[in-house]
Image (cartoon, rainbow, N blue to C red):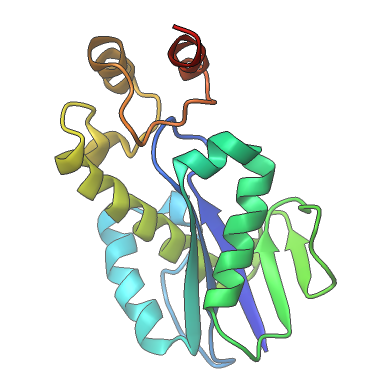
Length: 190
């Protein structure tokens, strides 16, 4: 059995990294499923329901901002992929992963640049990861008002950077990312 894996959230200044693994039946027919970055939010939400209705199994792996800060992005990506693969359940013999090879994975993981364009299960995983992460960031808006997380999803937009300058970082900001590193050093050494 084959499953696709993709992630969302490597670059934002706030929020988790989320990977998803999706196993589809061989005859899956999901018109419109593509790389999540090519789709609108409304289209991704609609397709998520279709994906989950036909997939044989799926799972997500979430890595917190604290884990990203503590171990770095390389470890965070490995952890997210591993968690998603484990959550997708047993019986998967090959994981097709979108992107460049990541160290630490055995032969059950095959990496392919633009895998979300070449494989329906990877494109489906791309959508599941993106929608999962977006929903987390929309919820974060009410927990951490003022940063615009519902609209910027934690990316370093001008409005988000202005909010950071005005409010300082929240508990879900990645303190190891510039421009937050300087604030992290200040907090550690007052």
